Length: 201
Image (cartoon, rainbow, N blue to C red; front, side, top):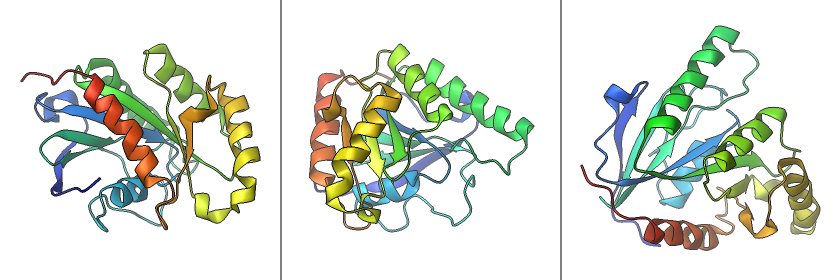
């Protein structure tokens, strides 16, 4: 998919700071070191749209990215960073919950997990929450370049079993380095975007 425009639309920590509801939004959730920012950058073929950091847990806000004035990608704060205080983790949790619970133009939440590791308890909780809200349950297994293609099958099976994903086709290996499965991910996201009505202001 050819992206003409991709820019940071808004940074928010509460609903008062969200952009207007005129565009459909696809949100990405995952652990703080799973590579959400790198994933977003690679999907829109930009190097520095979403800021990446060597320090996990740096994304403490909800970042809204306008894609071709047609929809938004939404980068949610990463969870599970042990070096952050419990109070700070609870704050991030509230930021995520407010967005997910109140955003009417949110059409999908995609969970990102590291293909090299079994999903954590927090990943399971997030996935169960996503499914309870009747979203599709799409899982992007990042860092696919870190393992051989021969290990894809066993890694995907482990993710499916741990998260109880209903269909293995909902788990897509992805590499932000070599853009493995970029076209396949776009195909799935485009179907989701086409299936939902355009929101009003």
